[in-house]
Image 1: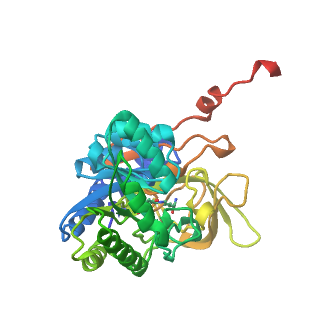
Image 2 (image 1 turned 180 degrees about the horizontal axis):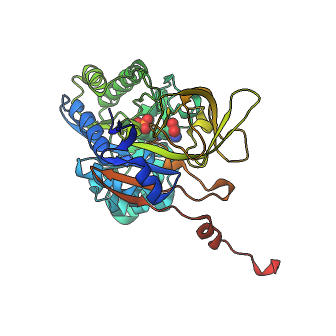
Image 3 (image 1 turned 135 degrees about the horizontal axis):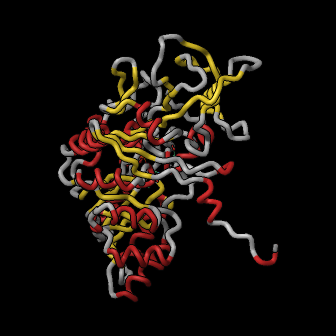
Length: 419
Ligand code: LLP
């Protein structure tokens, strides 16, 4: 459910007609709906309220925009961060340090030091080596780092290979059969307070059974670690719940996810932590674009839009599907290839797709672009950095400027030795 709907034949974000935003800000532009964001945040949070003790850390990587984080902070969300940049954003948005979890396979010394100074709630350790380095930093500062050990449960998430993280061949976490020994070693380190386990097996999961298998495995590990005399008070179950990108696709609902978690974790007697990203922000945004022209092809015509793979990388990177819809459809349909202006063939959003008929100058959207959209944008082909707008009822604001290619050029230097 989202708040992007047609009124009088024109697609609106809440009460704002999208042509108004295109006129004011230009295209391409990401448009977020605050009401949709709030709704998703509440549905997920309320679904989990069947569980005894819950903390939710929003996966900042899915949409790190400051305004988005601000809305989620107000809904009681903490943050799952994977870099000092994301940490500073979460703090700037007013998220309580205690609600911040630091994940990521390559935390640097400087990042861990900054996170300790900020007083974050938990480090999800990816290795014994990282834990030992963090212990050293913590001791030098006279602090204690609260930690979970990320375990690789070797479960196939059944999603795209590039966003699977829980198979033994993936770089994430420690091997399942070595986890108990690593936990024991780190639990003995002054400077660390080992308090639990963490896992995340992948993103855009269409089914709950891989999650259930992974939670069950890590639950058994938790019991082994407790039996060895160690303390486990927190279990971080990660993110990964998928969303439908194609109208009509059916995905697990937050309530079904919560019921599965309740069943698997009954009797665990821990604080359960979650790191949702896409399920909160996916439907919150669209990428608004204008058709540059329609070019005749050998087969279907090419609809060349002014958004490209640098603005929305998912189709090029993961062959991802994003529904495409005209902002003011006339009721006719066409079969077309949708592409951007970038000079490589991966700049393709859809091939031989049945779409609303569009012509030069028409506006259209790629839907479900609120997660892993703007945040993965680049300036490839010396294009501008795509801007972001947030709508709230009949109000709207630019929440990230378009960074002109001239501004990016101005940050470059020709060294003296070339003059
Ligand atoms: N926690 C950890 C440790 C993660 O690595 C991720 C995502 C999440 C939570 C949030 O997962 P979510 O609930 O959003 O599925 N760029 C890709 C997705 C990469 C996801 C990386 N990790 C895409 O556009 O599909």
